[in-house]
Amino acid sequence: MQTGFALQSRLARPYGTLPHLCSAYRHRQSHLLAARSSCVAQASRDSVDEHELPENCQCTSSPPCSTPLSNNLNSAEEDTTTLFGFFTSIFKSSPHDGAIFSLAFPAVLALAADPLLQVVDTIFVGQTGPDALAALGVNSALFTFSFLVFNFLATATTPLVATALAEGDARRAGTVTIQAMLLATLLGTGLTFGLTLGADQALMLMGADPSSTPEMFSLAKDFLLIRAFAAPAVLLMTVGNGTFRGLQDMRTPLTITLATNAINFGLDTLLILGLGWGVKGAATATSVAEWVAAIAYLSLLYRRKDQLGGLDIRGAVISSSLSAAAADMAPFLQAGGAVLLRTAMLLGTKTLASATAARLGPTSIASHQVVMQLWLLSSLIIDSLAVAGQSLVAVDKGRGDIPRARQVSNRLLQLGVGGGVILAAGFWAVEPYIPGIFTQDAGVTSAAEAILPLAVAMLPINAAVYVFDGILVGASDFKWMAGAMVVAAASAVGLLVGVEPMELGLTGVWGALAVLMAGRLVTLVWRYQSPKGPLPPYILSAGEQEEDELLSSASAGDSKRSGSARVSCFVRFKEAEANVRPVKPPMQQQCDARAVTRRDKSTSSTPLTSSSDV
Image 1: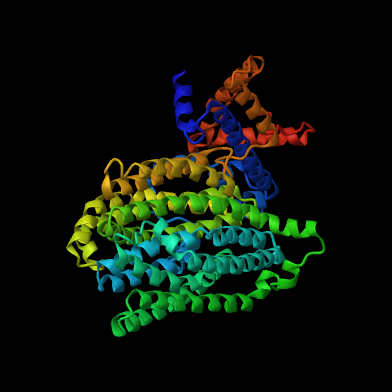
Image 2 (image 1 turned 90 degrees about the horizontal axis):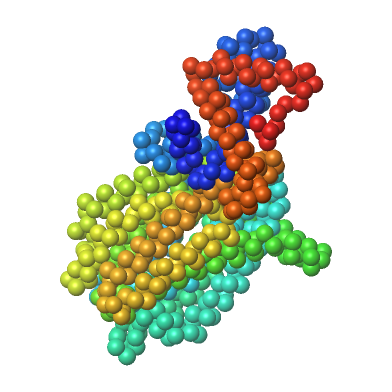
């Protein structure tokens, strides 16, 4: 009984329920026997003594044995060590590091296009006074929501393009790209008209009050009317970035981003400091830089048309029938719709936080803007791992290699959380100096210093959330992510609504943001560890699914089936106690003997026991 309890405690953690525990035992043992039997058979053909096989079953001439035995087992034990004890191996090398960093390093700056433009604008505009900085803060929140709510154009495009290419369907990858580009143009044009025609209403919705702060409101409107004309460019940049991610090319977006920020910096220096245009100069510089970037993306994608099935615009837009057109658009629209809902909930919550800070006064929104830049800068580093995850997980999943997708995901989580801890420590060391980088106003600096400790403490949580997002996006788990975001956002919104009545101030605003991120982390961890998720810790065969349903119905109280379920689970416990430990080196010969017996049965016309019969 004690042994069984220890075994249950050790192996049940990745699954969480007794039914999944039993299926895990059976699945693990079937993989063990299948992998070992294949190696024994290969050794027999090569006239090698089966007992001389290496412990990890490293064969070279047989495809089933081209991977070590540990990779043929289910990933439960690896998950346990990487998710629950992974801090011990964060700084150890991994075979996946090369692929991850080849995508993540260029993605750091490729992701930074719009956020870095905002940071540069904040530094320049902050030198002109608190009203201008507050006006920029209101617009930053508004445009972050207005532009990033359409981030589904990249989020959906990346895995769809990567999966199509992994399956050898370049034409489908090109069709997705063209459809996303056309949709970006239409949505961007509509957004430009909406923002310019409803400028006053949009700013008031963000908390700007023309009666109490007329100077700040006037400056905010000047910025909005200029920046709105870059909406189509921003959405085209989003699609271009997503497509290149799907192509696993991060260097091209990196080059474009460097050029974009160089243009923006030069124009900011000329227009704000040289000509004294203030917020108008910041808006003009950013808009020009974004249009240059959009044109560059379109030009470079056209040069890569051979990789995207020729980019047949006519074929992507005009189908032979309405049903064919709907079928072509369905994957993108379904993914995009779910991502749109998720993004809208996330950005809606952050926008409400900014609006709440704006209603607390110009000093509060200005300090909120300063600390939010810290979040943006830190997210750029960790989000690069999420981007790598989107591409790598999508490719592995498209090839049907779920175990490798899990291994890559676990390594990404290690690097992400480790990076979040390092960032938090670094920002904590320089915390007193951060507000002074953005403004010299004593009131804004003091308010920012009050909320910085909470913002810094949240960085490791944020890092885990960003990486989990990238993993599940790569797995195309869009619908579930949307539902989970609704739950997390609802909790944060409830707190934000009470900030003013309860006089919680800016600390209450950031407390609500902390609740948002913690809620996201809980739901994402649960999904990643769920056997019914897109990247299950183990894969159920048809027979295993039948037993899983039997055990689940017993757990739900089906008395007619509970007896069979208990017997089945008891058998799995006994088999696990007898069979799991022989994979260890001291018992390797017993493992060989079972594999030989299994092979002999197959050659004597007795069918091999399937995984559902073990």
